[in-house]
Image (cartoon, rainbow, N blue to C red; front, side, top):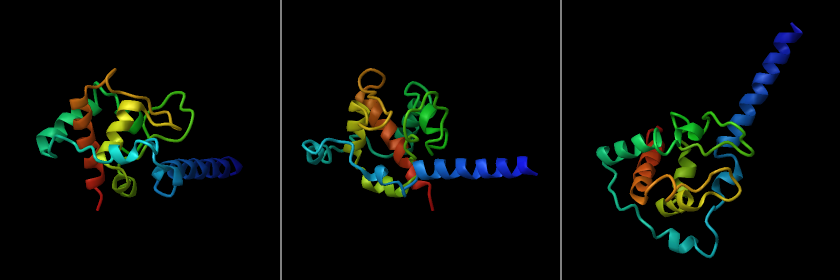
Length: 149
């Protein structure tokens, strides 16, 4: 009986840690990642590609392959991927509509280009992704937030 109680407590703690680290309740989620002296300009950047099913599909293919975004952000975009050696918080939960509303496309593009200070998110442009591929990935990332009711 002690074994099952310990197992239950351990499971509850694990669920709490995962939900607290990835959810909108975490104040770090809404903290700007772009330096203050660049944020206004970056917020004016717009995705040059329309959010069409074809463009979202292009982003999905890159997310799940060349960009290897799925490794950290998971198949469903919830940020619970397979992350060996994770040092800090869980990767961003793209289904979090509060986070989706707080970030402009320009901010997300800047993060893909420069990484996200204070997190394990590295830069991907131009070493892994072209700018065009990055914009398509962002269309796919935005689609996670739209699937919530």
